Image (cartoon, rainbow, N blue to C red):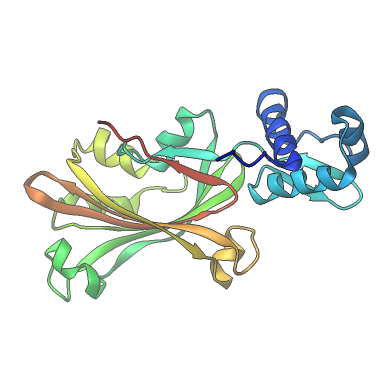
Length: 241
């Protein structure tokens, strides 16, 4: 059976994407539709369809009266590595910051009682932050920390978590060693509050990631729920034979 030919607009999309990733910097203005037509010898309809694909992928944004601009490559995270947001971003050359929405003691949510092995009226640390990359909001991260696993997590309440990395505090300062984590990843949509924090439209596609993190003796020290912008984030899974 003969393979179906690749549509012309998709070939153009691949060519433009390669040019963006190799030759453009974040914020650079793209050629106009007419300029792209002339450069690649294609129709305006083909150009528009190719640009639509780039827009869906979150690689370009259109500003009325100004043109089309490159938004930069998506932040990529390898799911086989147990790292925090800050370390993963810095490794890829990004600047980071956080806006702290909540950092306090709360009564443990019922769904965490069994995993945390904490009484129903027990207390846990709630740390909720908006995470930024290169001055843009990328994710809303809600972490619950278990004092029953290590009492020192209570000190997080006194720290400036708009500037500090949670995992650096736990790993480097307290010497807490993670043994493993169990994660789930699913597609979701942003509600009104999430959309406001992430500078998106309500109903926009997002990635919902949950993680239970464990230390020695199978103690669960953290449960974190993160909502990532669908146009700015991607995950990579490496499978080894």
